[in-house]
Image (cartoon, rainbow, N blue to C red; front, side, top):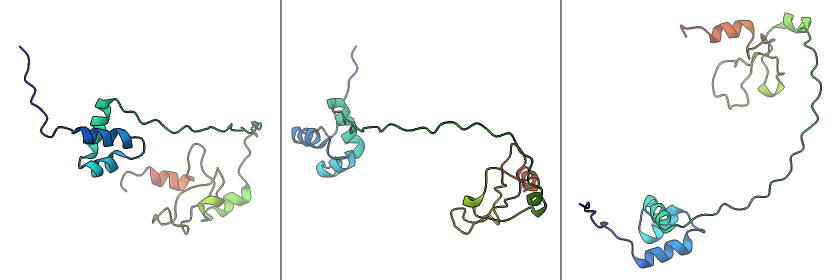
Length: 140
């Protein structure tokens, strides 16, 4: 026994198919839908059933030059003068890789005025000892 499939409530007209075929590569599904009075999903579904494909623009990739790997320097002990000073509260772009990145008064981190601790970070963390402990507190 075959199953009855009702006809679509709003069948596509030949003129709509023509517009879809003509504009598929030049316009988005939303734009075509507005043009013919259909939803974006209806347009995309019909294009798929008609076998229409949007080709991605051909992009020419440029070769990337990789700098020669520099030999890693042995770990140096932290600078004593710097440890004595502790926090320095400085902008993110002035921090070095081993500096604490704890923000001063968390506000809008996209603001240019946000400053960061800058004290020597403990190994394996982005924070100094005090801020690392603070970040792991449960009762925040």
